[in-house]
Amino acid sequence: MLARPIEPADTPAVARSASTRPAAWRCHSCAGRSLGVCAPLDDDALGPLAAMAGRRRWDRRQVLYCAGDRAEAFYKITSGVVAEFMDLADGRRQIVAIHTVGDLCGYSTRSRRHVFTAQAIAPAEACAFGSEKFSAYMRGNVQFACVVAGDVRERLNQATIGRTVVGQLRSFERVAHFILEIEERMGPNGVDTGHVELHLTRQEIADYLGLTEETVSRAFSKLKQMRLIELGGANVVAVLDRQRLAELARVGGRAASPPAIAQPSRED
Amino acid sequence: MLARPIEPADTPAVARSASTRPAAWRCHSCAGRSLGVCAPLDDDALGPLAAMAGRRRWDRRQVLYCAGDRAEAFYKITSGVVAEFMDLADGRRQIVAIHTVGDLCGYSTRSRRHVFTAQAIAPAEACAFGSEKFSAYMRGNVQFACVVAGDVRERLNQATIGRTVVGQLRSFERVAHFILEIEERMGPNGVDTGHVELHLTRQEIADYLGLTEETVSRAFSKLKQMRLIELGGANVVAVLDRQRLAELARVGGRAASPPAIAQPSRED
DNA sequence: CGGGAACTTGATCTCGGTCAATATTGGTGG
DNA sequence: CCACCAATATTGACCGAGATCAAGTTCCCG
Image (cartoon, rainbow over all chains, first blue to last red; front, side, top):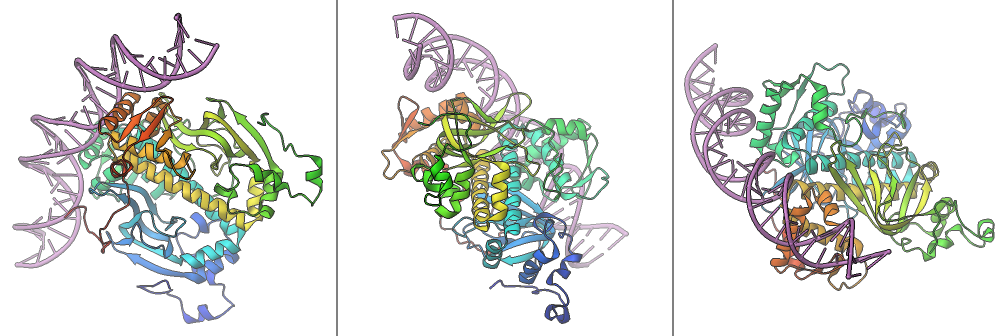
């Protein structure tokens, strides 16, 4: 089944065989252990997943799967960045999601086919779960099924906010929103230096926001001129005034920065 | 029809007590029984849901819930049309979903608050399930949890296609897509006469597609002039050439291109 | 019928797209 | 380490799709 170009699991034989060590022990060194669908699971619930997981990696620009392909696996990203997009016949492209460490991608239609194409934006690694086994585990474990449902629900909310951004905001407002979104999603590390590595090229940002690369570039220049950001090398942006940036980017009634980290089932 | 704002369940005592009549018996006359999350469930699985369900109804323009409100219930629509939208501070509005018979709405954030506002676009009725009970039933029934996960996944796909429509298509292409979408979602009845009742005003369509009402109106006129549609009274559209309409509206589905390996860059 | 809401159409303006010319960056080999 | 080259970004000039402003027109519904 799930082909593994690299290695099924870089695990010493001793660990695989013995029941003295739960399969989930390998997860302890995983950056995504406390993120996304893994976070709410204890080691017991994680065990079957860890046992079916294989490792995969892709270089920048490599494709994980294509729209229309039969869905073979889910991928939980452990490093790097992956974009999902839809293509139009004439070459227009809409990036519909950007995934990074902790995110699960590979959701498909009811007919088990991918709707989107996924491509590594930065060299990426992931835990791969065969679709069949993954679904079977869902059908056998309520907790996991609920966790997945919650994950998809969260993604639906993100997608919907994205639709509002593209449908209603002006170009530079969209870019402001993008900067804050990336800062939030990519840097879940505690204190921020105010420096955000974008990972996406101007063209990719344009495809994400429904603009052209020239307009995106102009928007960056405008925000820089407004003293809200500073542009650095290596595609890094320094956020100078998060407050005003957030006002430009505001979508929906309340603050655009819900504590998005994987955490308790309820807050406030 | 049965009206009445909130009742736990107007079930004859005999049905509630006796095992001779499952609680789901009332569902047999429901238009949504074979749609959405109810469809995959047999009467046994439906029973607990039916037992917790109450009926609600809203007039045109009435609000089901507001963004930021604490989520109290899920609503499975049994008649009418409901729109979910996000508002911006300055009055701009994005309709992010249109729901009709069979659709479940009321999904919230992890913090149990609504992200969107829901409003009846046409007088609507729904089966209401208290959030707590609904979630509890999910946590106790794998099948139901999986069904809900599948429903949300489907919605995610729709939302993503919507984002592509708004981000990439020209105004009249978006309207073409809208017409076909409404035809498909509102008329699940067998053979179509080619007549689609839109239910939404021009302004609402505009808010859905990220346009202005004038532009929407011009797009309708243009499609009419192109002999693809005919405009009738009562906000009804006659589809004259579904084929060409679909070509304008096409997103995602690549036709015959071999899904070769990593296409390094966009063109060439 | 009458009046208000929804729709259509026209005139003009503007934001963002398009085309095109540099400028900058980053990677590679000498 | 530097020179060179391709990829990416920036900036400018111009254009056009869609927004805006402003009348009219049609459709409901009492």
